[in-house]
Length: 397
Image (cartoon, rainbow, N blue to C red):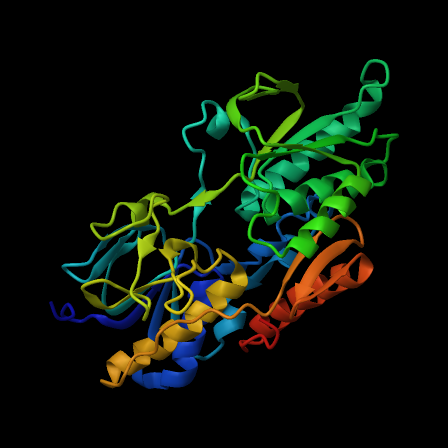
């Protein structure tokens, strides 16, 4: 079916790493020929890969602007219209998007709505756990830990607050190390007790998919940070201040954080197209939906498989940016009746923060750890934020 009458040339859903990059690159390459409408619930781009920094978020007077970039700064006078609205439905047949502020017709569409926490049907997990997949969730967690730590001197005996982090991927690992190494006494102004942090890895390997040498150093640094790791057993139920494991272990705790996985949001998972078990949209090598020319999906909303290796692209900001550049080029190619590119993923490197001034990284088969790795990760994050605020493409991702 052709585009709806009065359709916008390109509508981008989501202002995360993937969506923002598509909008910026199409505006840069297509100019006034292809104006863009970017739909997001918020007027800012959230630096989601930095939301594990609950110690900084818990600091008195913390400026949340450190974790966001205003979209007005990103686009300036570029041909991008930001529409602050919630996406409520996508009608592929009618070529239109239903939002909380009205219907938006499109000629081309890029679905980059990210992901939400996947609870896998575990009873109590949605009700009794925190998450750091959104800025609001990370802020709530930081405040909760700060309150618990402020009250910790009154705990009976030598008991310290216990925090359980569920999920042994990069998010759970970084968060556990951050909580364990934060100086809570300085932040609270009282003799706060150092928290006991437990990382429940579950049945999946610790930092699955990362280079073995990085994993080895990460495990050692996590141990030195004081994080206890429980591997090989999954969480089967969560109650208020209690985590039940499948081997019968019950962990009494003060806070539980869920970092065990992601899935596509309902508006994406409900589309009548091929999807993965996690609701992500299966795409062609050009990142278009099968049978839907001009409709693209990318980032955490899509299941992207490298056509050469057959492997799935990781759900990382680095992969999202690479996918976005291909989508932007293919949107312009569709508009000009040109050939489309296929997506091939080439990872530049990976890094994991492991507490105050510590990290592990792998770059071009070289593993570094400790302070150099932490500095590398911080430099990449800051360069991305600065470049994005200037409306430029980051040079290191």
